[in-house]
Length: 365
Image (cartoon, rainbow, N blue to C red; front, side, top):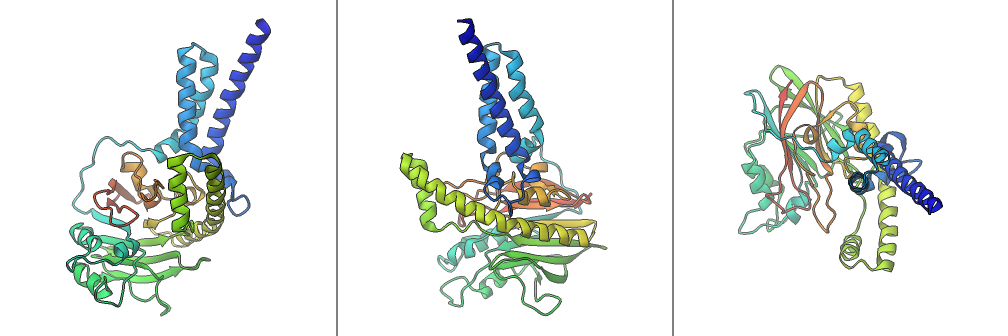
């Protein structure tokens, strides 16, 4: 019996240590794994919430059975991941009051203005944007039709007539990044495309006049995960039915595509970070659809010099992509140290797109 007790104790220590080590690897993987070299390992952040739950349950069980020494392992693991926990699940209790000089910034992947559909001559996304009272609107998937039965550029401009400043051509005369736009109440001084390898994705930089200062605003739509409608339906069925073979085949497809996209997205995040380093403005903001989760190389790279508005002033998971049971926060507003963001909100009051809009109040710090 004594030998059996030692074996069980060894198994307990092994399982607990393994769970804590996996948690730490997942939490710190964005800083140690280069997605271009190790695309599969770069997806470790996806299992972070599951590992948090496992370690938390282990901690409770070990405390319940008075195994206090072993309980130190999951406790220390969770404590060392406090920063990642607060990034993934911020819980800021109090709403801050806005100062007179603050502006409201809104970022929204519109899914082509809800597939350009008009009902009785109106479009839900455009109506939402008009009523938002934002000072700056950053749009991704800004696709319009030439057919008047659907949403046209004329419809967008008319609805958003309160925004006199729109991004035009870049400084070198080239067209701006397709499917992206900025509507602003602040004057747009200059527009520039940030160089990066991509087909239909990318980033635009805008210099805006904000009082006597210049705001560097970057609107980005980074590499999508290239999941087809069939892939998403397969994932939804996999979650609902739990059939072993279906789950195995589905995970294989999903992991492969997610890893490939992660390897493409990493240099794109590096390009934005390099651009910011070369333009050391006091007031910098990055908005957009990162197509990546809070525990990822993309988020880690861009928040090394910028602060996540949702982490600092939001509450809960802030799920911004919500279709086909893919529930993740992939839309972001980041600000430099010279700025302070308050009351950052992922607004689930409108579900016309597959993304929810995200907005925040921003003031000079």
